[in-house]
Figure 1 (cartoon, rainbow, N blue to C red):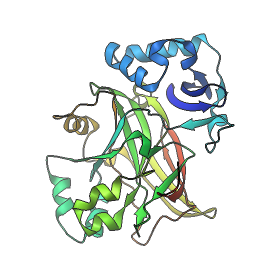
Figure 2: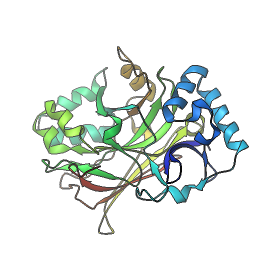
Figure 3: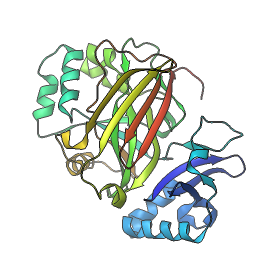
Figure 4: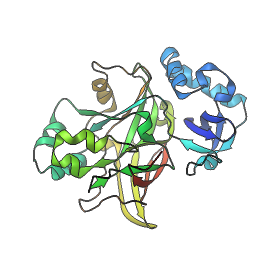
Length: 306
């Protein structure tokens, strides 16, 4: 399997990496212009096609030694230690809603307006909304946040598709669409406030390139939340439970819109904690997706300095 990641090196700074067999190769060190950043790599994939870009990546991996093991990068951000970054640099994040039955039911419950989300679930047009700019996104090991004015916040684990400017699928990663359910439930027009704020989005740990993810039809998604080392929630679903296909969601995303630096698209959640659950500072959220890996984040508050 071949994956892409971004990481910080205390010596060299931000790097684009490729992961194979538990080892991380520094693509930026190749000094090839298309590998200096994720944006450059996305542009390469858009120009020559995703298969050719993957072949070029595999060539660099085969030619050079690895810099770190994967486990060495899995730690909290620290300027004196190598660590993972979110695997995006200049890309927007968009998201889809009500793509699983469980999500539809939960949002009906929070809004107390029966029928709104049922209509979305059954409609031809999916719910697609803007989620985050890069500065609002954190990566594996970093802290996600709950809004300071929210009283009911939950994580939402989502399979996330990575797309070129021409909306070709590069690969897949895990995403956490942290949401303030009480704010959205008060009025659906408050959705942007419930969804878009600093550290409301986590992406990672790495991007599994499309051929290695799509080789199997079903992916299991799990989420575990720990509080003071005790499991307070665990849930699981799989991508067969999605009502809408990834192809359909991408097609609607691209209608009358452009993404010159590429885009990440969260495909909705099928795992929703019970109504009496609320994220608290210090909770540990772990999201596992087949063939992608584990995305881990502690919970803080949105006002924390970056």
